[in-house]
Length: 232
Figure 1: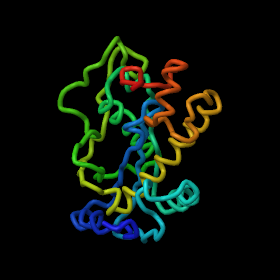
Figure 2 (figure 1 turned 90 degrees about the horizontal axis):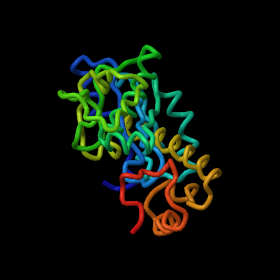
Figure 3 (figure 1 turned 30 degrees about the horizontal axis):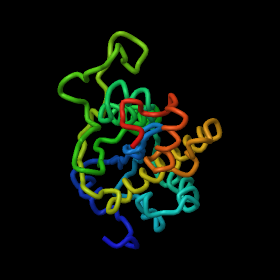
């Protein structure tokens, strides 16, 4: 697909035709970073009536300035939206897939609190990491992420439909990717002010050569994913 081809609501509207009044687009950012959280964006729309947003694309195709300009447009356009995060400590404790589910659950909880829980979620990719698993999550070192002994089931209780390159073709998913990217980048910029030696304001925690070299020179922080290979 050409970078200039705008995403549409065609896919989301197929579910409106099947009776789904509220459909959510979902995407994550930060999966491959060495530091910082994974962040999951959720955007809820009525696909039968939502207009198109001409400038929205997958966040990777947009400049930082354009992404920031689009945030208020997206939040005004959506019936509800939220971004959830799971920290580096949580990623180390439960693994990346469980951390993604935890971040997604936090976003869904925010949506539910606004009274706009979708009946279906369109998730970018080919693997459903968002749904409540059929077996309990395996937790490590007594970590439960909830501050108690009992770990409730977390994840999406509604149907989740995966679609490869949904962030390129589905407007709700592209919009979710923009919200997640802007919010996570803001977190990394704030952390950069506390830890300027790692260059997080520029690399956003990803595995650049300079970032790996800084970890080797200064050691990892609590914001690094210490279970990962952090140096070359």
